[in-house]
Image (cartoon, rainbow, N blue to C red):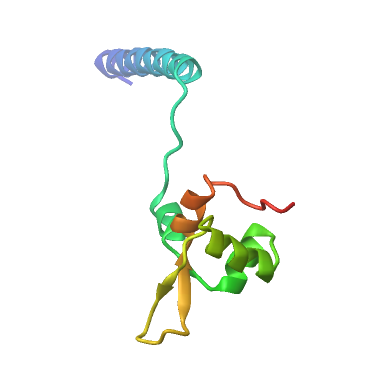
Length: 112
């Protein structure tokens, strides 16, 4: 290998090592910042879609861990929303998971 190629290779190795040290230091700084400043949870699109999910009464009852009588009692008392009619039929009532979570302050499994 000619002298100029070995010099170029050594220079590249030095630059790579310098970049690695820089990135290592940067990573340490990022970890320190994350530990010092609590970050709010970031919702992914899937989590947002899950929150907008429509659920039937039985699904909500299972989700909350309550009996049907308790579920409908909570609706009468205004603890839970009344749900929404879909499909032009008054018998088809669905609830948004986000509305249920908001009415209960994000609690789940309240009867357990």
